[in-house]
Image (cartoon, rainbow, N blue to C red; front, side, top):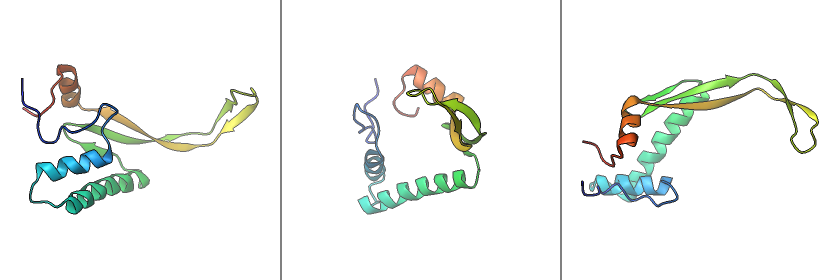
Length: 112
């Protein structure tokens, strides 16, 4: 069994942005906490900017985020059963890479 890496600090409720920042800080000791925060925030901002430009985001070994366009469609209010029009919108679809799927199914916790 492998010893846990310094970046495995998430709680049982899921991995948070703050825990990711702490993992970056602990993995790269030369960085200050503020630098780790700026790096992570900039990565998220770049990903979000790509989505707003309708660009897909591909992260090798992790997966692909694709912006999907949903058309206007008829729907129904589940409480009142009144007919309603669902407005067109964009959503994001995530497709995991084969590598990620294999690691999750194998129960791996750190890279080989």
